[in-house]
Image (cartoon, rainbow, N blue to C red; front, side):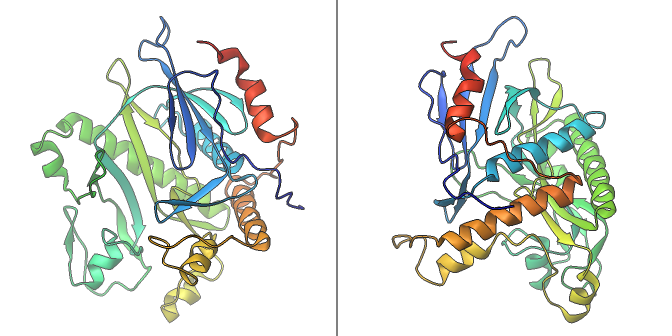
Length: 326
């Protein structure tokens, strides 16, 4: 597929929509409460922006559509495991969901000894820790090896811009972050969602390594899955072919490598302090191709870009017009 680099949704600032909130990647609007949705609904528009180092690096054609449609594919197939917030998909880049109170615990499920951040199990394991997040890992595990069983590694959600802190199940309950019943339900749903995701991924020649879930409470106190699920941005996928060889040599398993832009930027500046260099067009096209490949490998379906409308923003505006002025 040829990549039209001009066909991007850089932002979705739509003044006719109410109560805006603009994130790093999503532009959101809150619809007012009504009799059907007492807490209101939220319009979440996935732009094509790609962020790292707390900055926007570039806009990647079709990235927003890929992420929205991958999440939709999984939401449709997991509603029997956990109900979700979705109420409508008015546009390929847009989901409308029930407004929920996001639970104050970040739920990450890990099936492998992997990761690079300070809170990852691999980083802590290599530092000599064996007790982490309320789990005990055995000695002798290799980098990127499968864990004896999938585990949840919860952290506190730092809503005020602070740092997430590792938690155990006992701490979550004792600190009043969740009730025992809520934790039991959330952990059960998260592990079941992950097991299903791993099963489907294996059928596609992929390994679902780890993932993040967002859960929230609706107006009735029901736990809903929100945000996204099993997308290439919220999850780590490895490609099965080549995994065993990488494990034997201690090298990084093959994956959907979206880090090429980040690595290119780091090689040329301090991204936390310096002005960002312009990302080359060929690198943007390469990253777009990675997202499209991820969609097709994960879902088993051919990616069909929506080229309607003079621009992606014109199309989004037209599809969201029924909600103008609310």
